[in-house]
Picture 1 (cartoon, rainbow, N blue to C red):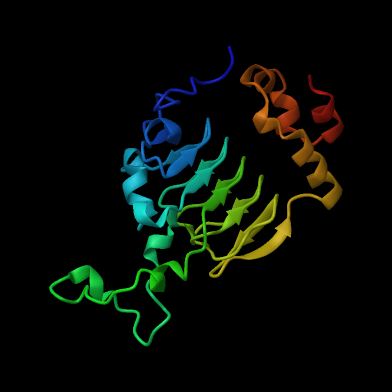
Picture 2: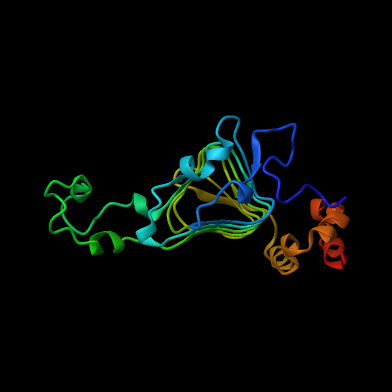
Length: 212
C-alpha cells in the first residue's frame, strides 16, 4: 500500500465532502499539487468557481498551491481581478457597464495595482472561512487560523490569525525550520513518504533526516 490514489476525486470514499483538488480543478490559472484536499460538505466540487474569486485571463495572475495542503470549508482566495482602479478619484468600475462608460478607460489604472501570483507552499493548513488576498505567499508548513484575512506574506511554519492576520508564533525554532525545509518530505516519492510516516508525523528531526 502506498496511500490513497492521487488521481482520486474523493480520496476517502466515506467522506464525500473531501476532494483532491488537483483532480477537480481544470482552470489553467490554478495550479495545485498532489494530495492537497478541500473539505466542504456542500460545494467541494465547485472550489474553482466558489473559492477562487475574480479571476480574469487578461490579468495573467495565477493561484499556485503546493502538495499536502489541507483547506477547510469556505476558505477563499481573492485574485487580482478583485481590485478596482485606485489611481483616480473614484474606484467605481464604470467601464464594465458599457453603454459609453467604457470609453476612455485605461487598463493601466487596473494593472497598476496588480500584486502578482498568489502562492501557497506545501503542508499548509488553511482554516475555515479564511481569506487569502492577492499576491500573498504562504510558506511551507504554515497554519492559517479560521476566519483570518491574510494580507501579507506568511513565513514557513508560522501560525497566523486575525483580521488582518498577524503572526502569533512559529511552530518550531529557526534551526529546526531550516532543517525541515531542507528535508522537504512533501517532495519525496509517495512510497518513501508511506514508509516513513512515523517520522513525518513525529517530532524527531534526526529520524526524519535519516529516512531513506
